[in-house]
Length: 166
Image: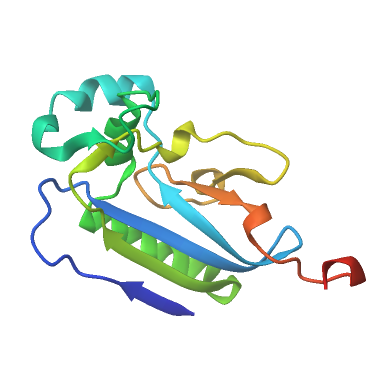
């Protein structure tokens, strides 16, 4: 398993600034499925943490000024990120629990400011090929914070390719 943790070029403006993704070798009939991990934020957490961030420096203009967007979704992008300590704990847990099943674990700091219109992972929908993993629901989950993962199987090749797909 390959682990790539890219250190920030400079200190991020907030502690909660790190993204983590893992690539699962075989998952639901697909190979090398990328799963974007995040810290789910319920409404109570959102309300309690919302005032703790300097939003005027963390958020930027919209990606596209003509598109409609949820102004709170970009805030959830920040709140769903991990601190460096949480990232390190999560990477260690993934190595120990899923090491032989994972192709890689990748982490880097988010680019700030976050553009308005960026969608938080928790705001993405589930469907025929997309969904969420609830890592914090596994037996004997040891971390003191919840972790979810978003995946989209349509982005990945099947384990066994049929004649039609070739």
